[in-house]
Length: 334
Image (cartoon, rainbow, N blue to C red; front, side, top):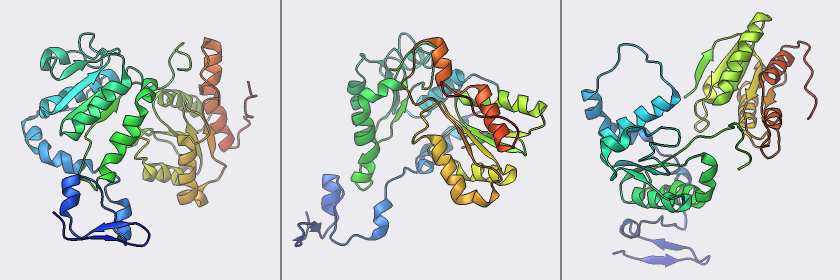
């Protein structure tokens, strides 16, 4: 099966032939590995997979003559339906995705169309069904694992960050894990603690945000426009990969940056965006960057405290005005 084994003074084992790695499915560590191998198989290249199945699908698919307005719920439902139709290896599993058609009706109609073999209701055991999904992906299936809310994914975090995310790298690309974990995230009323798109063009200040804060930022931009400030609003849509080029291009145009997010300020998305701009566009800045984030506390249950813990339109307005050197002091701490 292999020609020779060499054990050096440091106890590192080296195999002379590559056949063993294919049999065992694990990365073999050579005594003097080539430096570029460090980053091999760390990031999945989706285009490679899409090119294998998409040409046939695209050839048979009809397209609308113009854009269609739909809710995020409808867009998610349509996307899952298209993937299940295109590839029989794709299936959906999670709490209430079948008979109840999803806690938020994302899977509406899919059980009737594809049957219980591909739309699978699970018990309330996030660690259990996430592990089943990872195992199915190991064997070539393509599961979509739905958590009722993404807070519950923490129950399955070992499967997500160790089994699913790292197997491709640890096996030198021999074990791929084509799996999607999905679920709603962000603040909602009274639930307690448990590629980028420019939505609005502007020339005075760049507001970078995502998810629920996009709507708040657009409302703030409307108010700012009445006061003579032209705000450009960027909807990130994805935080990994992060569209650094779009962010920096906008900042080089406006010379000012405000980031808006619901999450905690420390180690947040806004901090990463600010660092990217400092690295790539520092000389273009005419004012310090402003970061708007949630309060550094567990989410309160009371509605009035919840509002105080989350960014509001007034917070965005004050930050944008400060970057433009308008009179807008920071709000007093709660």
